[in-house]
Length: 57
Image (cartoon, rainbow, N blue to C red; front, side, top):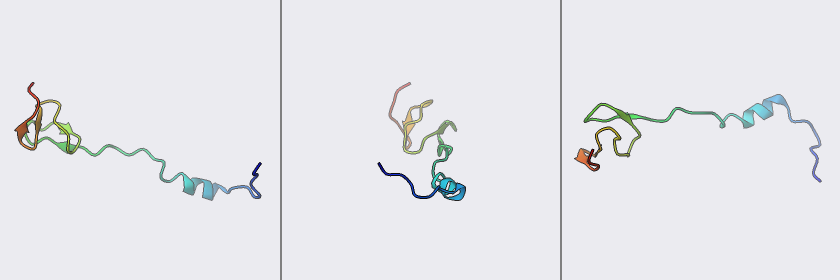
C-alpha cells in the first residue's frame, strides 16, 4: 500500500483546493421582459428566444 513519505503542507493542500469554489451562475437580462435567465436558454417567463416566441404561455 502506498504511504506518503512526507506530510503535505498546509500551503500545498490549500493550493490544490483553489479551483473547488462555488461561482455564481452567469445570468443575462431578457430583452423582452427584463427577467434574468441563463444565456442561450428560453426565457421561462415570456417563452422567447432570440426575439422569437418559442414556447406559448
